[in-house]
Amino acid sequence: MRTPGIFIFGMVLAPCGWILNLTATVAPNWRTINTIASMPVDTFLQQGIWDICKVSDSSRVNLCNQKDDAYFNNQIIDVAQGLMVASLILTLIGLATATPGVRCWKDRPNWTVAGLGGMLIFLSGVLTIIPIAWYTYILKDMAASSTDIRVGYCIILGYIGGIFELLGGLVMFIGICRCCGGKNRGETRVSETTARFRNTNPPPRRIEVPSIARTRSSASSVPYSKDSMEDDADFPRAKSTSYGGRRPAYDVDL
Image (cartoon, rainbow, N blue to C red):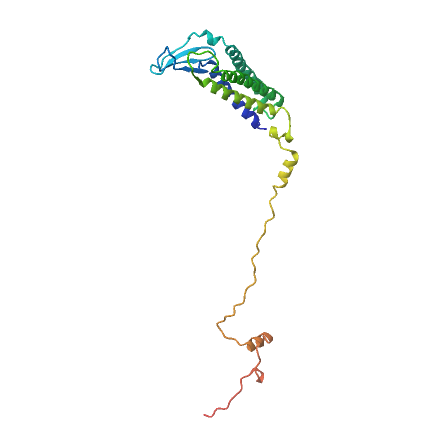
């Protein structure tokens, strides 16, 4: 039996979501602070949940480890740090659990084990969406040195990674119960299989037999009358001559 499609779908989305969430966790770009009064126009701040960097468009130099106690004292920062790290760890546990259950190298997978792994991956996606959505909701409520506040790319990556894990885990978890006649597991009913084999007999072929009847042509090279044709048909044998078939003798005067 080949690997079911729901397992392939989940085992592809889950690692992709994990990579996106890892980038969103460690990168210092959850929001950007632009148009700061005490800094040049082309300079802005990138704030993450672990670090703050000062970036300049003209020099392309990033100065990280910037101090901002008012920012890091927000409750969302501690919550986001804990939940994002827990999400990364839970995704790895879910993948480690689902891999033996999928068993693409054997005939039949272990649906229960793979479904439990999918449930863990689904929960990791929930742990990612919670801090990302909360941070987005209070994005402009947190203290900042400017009113020009924009969403960073880490928020976008976090949303995409969390959705990938939600979808992948949910699809894998569906296989833990057999429903719809096993169609969710890629199985086929016995009646459908039997009917398929019954319908494989080829239909009877129709053989065209050429007709041997020959049409009689009305045209002929020798003209015959209707009476002569009837006489020939009624008397097919040759007519006998008189005198017993002997040639008569004639007197010839010399």
